Structures are given as C-alpha cells and as structure tokens.
Length: 358
Image (cartoon, rainbow, N blue to C red; front, top):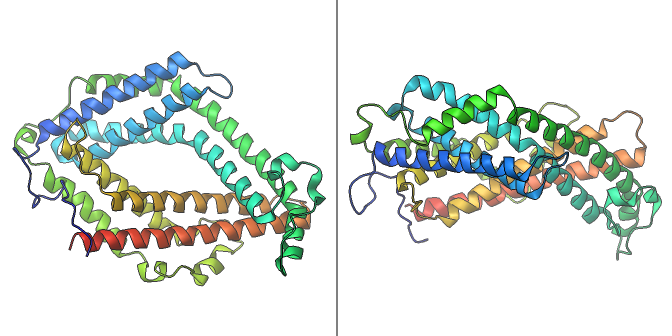
C-alpha cells in the first residue's frame, strides 16, 4: 500500500498551529495580486513586438498563472468574500487568462503535430521544413511497415506545410488579439482592481474566524465526484478501441468523450489552488507527486485532443491531395491514441492516490 500523504485541505488532517482562516486567504490573494502586477510591469518593460520576445512571453505566462489562481480562489472561497465583487472579477480574470493562453497554445500545438508527423513518417526533416520535397523517400525500415511508411512520407511534407500555415496564422492572430486586449480599457479596469486587491481584500465579517479547510475539502470532493463519473474501467485498458472509432468520425463537433475529462482537469486545478490557499502565502502546501502526475496526464489529454481536432480540421481543407489527406488522417488517429494513453496514465495516477488515502 502506498504511503499516505497528509492533505492540508482535509479538516481531519493534523496541523501545527491554528486553523487557516480568511486571513490566510487574504494573504494568498494579496501575494497573487502582487505577482500579477509584477508580471504586468515585466511585460511592459520587455516590449511587445510582432512576435513578442522571450521575456514578454514569460511575463504573459506569469500573468496567466496569477489570474488563474485569483479566479480559482474566488470560486472555492466565495462565501468568505464580497459576492458582488467575486461575480464581477471572475469572468474578467477568465478572459485575461484565456486570451493570453491562445498564442502559446497554437505554438505548442504546431510543434506537437510536426513532431508527430516526423515520428510517423520517418522523414529526415520536419514536414514544414521539407517543403517541395513531398516525395522524398522515408528512412529504411525493416519488415512490412516500410512501404506503408513510405506512402505516409509522400503526404507528410505537404500536411506539415498546411498545418504550419494554418496554425502560424492562428498564432499570429492570437498574438495580435492579446496585444489589443492588454491595451484595452477592459484590461486596465481589471489591472486596477487587482492593484486594489494587492492591498485590500474584500473579506466578509465572519471570514476572520472561518476555517478554510472545509471549503477546500469541497473542492476536492467535487473533483472526486467528477472522476467517479469517468469511465475509469475503460481507461484502465491501454487501448480503447471504441473511443478510437468515435474519434475517427467525420463530425466536426468536439469529441463527446473528451468534455468530462476536460472538466476533471479544471476541477483538479481548483483543488490544487485551494491547497495552496490553505497553506498560506508562503506556499507551504504538501507537494503530492501523485496529484502532480494526474494533472500532467490531463494536460497531455487536452493537448492531444486539441491536436487531433486541428489535424481533422486541416484534413477538411478543400482540394488537398489524397496523400496529404491520408497523412492528416494518420496524424489524427495518432493523436487520438495519445488521448487514450493520457487517460490510462491518469487512471494509474488517480488509483495510486486513492490507495494512498485509504
């Protein structure tokens, strides 16, 4: 049996010192607001050219991190904060985080898909770099897989070039949208409210004597309920043929099996941030490696799901060559296999966590 790790969000856990109350939440929110303002200052100092610098990209990531944590705390501990203020701030912080996330998401998606094409086709260069060398021969492979790999290579270069054009355009638009958002009056209003939060947290009158742990435990329970609703028995098998068949459907709507897994990912994030808030502004939360592994598996699940959708969307481009469509179809199937592998990894990590807490 795995060793049990104490969960600071569990009111039954043993803690040294007094129970964390609204004062600890206020300290956490002030710290995150300060991080938000520091990241905003860094973003302005590093500049914002057409493609952005590494410093501005890191600043944008820091803005997203702090915005997510503030928003999550308003969700988990809303009963301890001014209700009207929470209802106003949460959608605005979600808008900031979501807008700033898109450019990085498109960049990572393109890299993931090109790497997968490179792996699947055995080409000597990434497909987007191959350009007109669409008919280049594949690396020699032993066995019956060699002709099939060669056929894939014929379309892989053009498939990579198509994905590169589509996702680079989307990334450029996302970058422009983020710059416009950061210069908008809407964002300045959010930044002003975060600046006030850095010094003044709108706690309720009873927050100073209210234990945070039951509220944080509720975040854990919501996560546990959502995981219980997942098909973990199916995910316990390394290969889910039923899901793959559905994943190959020509329907353009999001994959029906993915939504509950995406929801679990969001609930896991709320649980993690609630643990951070309970631990206080110094960040003394117990690091649970199993919880971390579960979160990483769900991140891979999201990335593979979105990459598969991008490959499917590219395959619907009018008048593409059959070899290109074939390569995109293989790429789509590969990413759906990655989705199933991520579900299996999450199932393994979550089962370990369950055993450890028993």
